[in-house]
Image (spheres, rainbow, N blue to C red):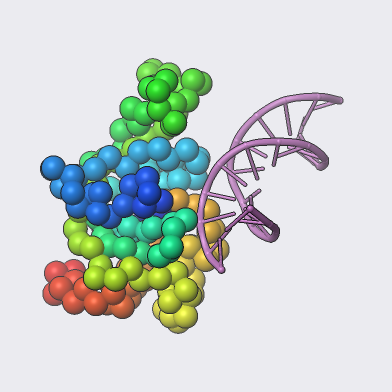
Length: 160
DNA sequence: GCCAACGTTGGC
DNA sequence: GCCAACGTTGGC
């Protein structure tokens, strides 16, 4: 069981969009960075918990929690010429990019802001601060539980 | 294999 | 909108 932070621009796909999916599940696609791809492909597992991070917006920070519900599979968008994520160099035989499906778990009552996170001693070693551009990144159990407690999601104290 | 040029991310 | 950081591309 691992913990992750996945970034998304909420204008593209937000925690509300995930919550509003008919199935309660969404496809985490469009990852086009090799380091993030390798983590998705090799280390992200069904059941892992994900901090849903909103980037490039007014309220930058962790907006809620999701859970990984599939292993990595070929990202369909790489084969779709209409998609912004189309990759003409990828082939069906050897897909270059992968995605996973995630399920909505919770939305924080207020987004835990990046500037708040930077002030918390337990969070100073987060990959977020060292590799700011990595869009799929590992989170320690301490970092995860610290964040959900700061967000006031007390139910995690009993369910984790 | 190096490295300059270029493109993208993402906080502010 | 700016700009720093950093990933990718491509010439040599």
